[in-house]
Length: 159
Image (tube, rainbow, N blue to C red; front, side):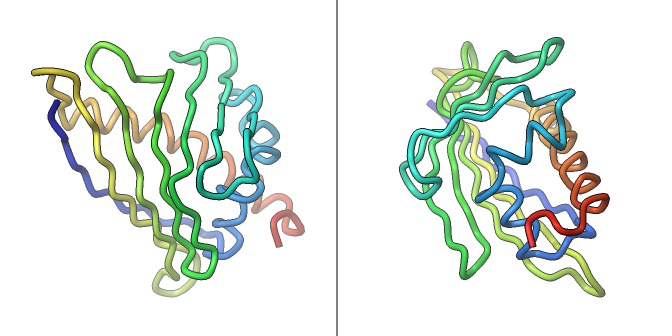
């Protein structure tokens, strides 16, 4: 097994605390509303904190049927969260799991700078290229941009 690490940053016009709430605390309710073209439903096994299992079921036409995530840590005070994709999605022939460490900080001006550290755990001698990583990021970004648009259109949500 090998490990491919990748660092990624993106910005959002949404405040750090509001975005954190949207993608952690309220994600099970918000993702299907904000991105029904991608997320069919979200199922939680646990209270949303560390140890919770999250199953995201995707809409028809999405390349994957579902992903199951294990919440590794949630730090509301520091607006950081970590999780691992442990089943479904891109896992299979090349990948055993994917781990994400995310930190939300105030961006210069306003909004949020999201800092993500990803680790792709490969199976055997498999490789996972930068292009494949960028493809995964692009899929996730579709959900996050839909969440942003939903929050901008609904200012009372996640406040």
